[in-house]
Image (cartoon, rainbow, N blue to C red; front, top):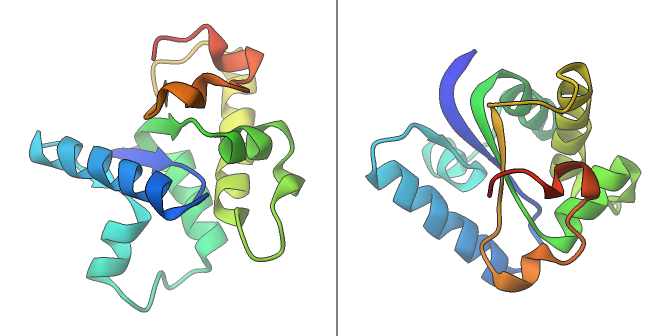
Length: 135
């Protein structure tokens, strides 16, 4: 298990990415080791040696803490990982698939996974399976 906080989110629009970036920066300021795709790209512009989908899967599998940043697109990926279009959302879909399997194996009781809502409207569509968790 890697001692890091992984932010699982779907790149829906620039405003949403900006909110996720602000969260990542705040967590980093507080001394937490944060894994955020834009931080990774800043350090390694060519991207991961493995495919992005494999990188996403590995982060979701191996991080000590996974923060699922709530949004309608992330919820769609959680409900059906095949919902990702050909050019968007595939990383979130890969992560959501791994997260679902982890939660199933944990009988939906976890201290590793949390939902984060960055906008009041992001509660709309929150999947019932994770709606009762502390946010």
